Length: 286
Image 1 (tube, rainbow, N blue to C red):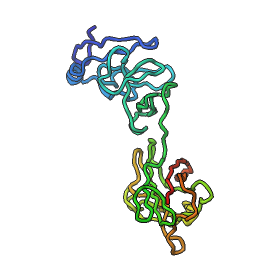
Image 2: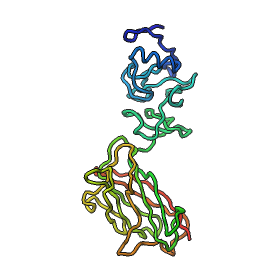
Image 3: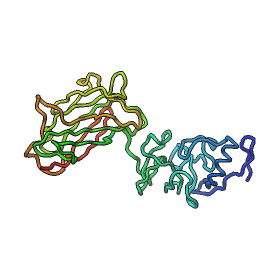
Image 4: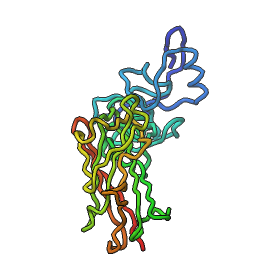
């Protein structure tokens, strides 16, 4: 069928019914690109939120999943592969969806979710998909113990465990600080410092504050020296360092500490008193 788009007449894409509703089949990538340049009447990207067809790239449509008030640019992949994104099975059938690393990659109220094959895609809440957690989480840790760099703690050796954070949400997290505990009877064997950004430039390292052996740093104790993370940003410096000097003596791993994995639990808190709890394990060796 011929349709008019601005001053141009173009062929409308073939359509296919999915879950009782109509989705377009994807036309060839070359055809779509040429027609989009000629007409100037299609916009947006696969996986974007939309209010009408003109918000979406050619060959897709502005589709409203049956379980959501949010409309999304997509196309059926039940009979042909996706030119862009990945084909996923949803409550609305097989659709092409944008891939994502975190919620930051998804438009508006659309979520970053995992398929049963652990592929992460941008889509509305769906029983076939598992939302990726958002907020502040541990991005990485580094462990040194004595002269060893094998990532383990060694009995009787001094040590340093550096904990970095990342913001996987869509909002800026301000005034970020953290506490830490370890599993078992040796929960207080470490000293602790917290890293913070510069007051003049929060993206630059400002320094550290000593949190003592109980590793509990309150905002008041930090005198406002805390870290802010933008959406998708990972800290460039450790939010927590489980080491430092306590009473002028560098802490060591207790010589009678049981061998094997020890779990560290970290609670992140921001200026709005939102909290996120994460954990990691470190092996204790001779």
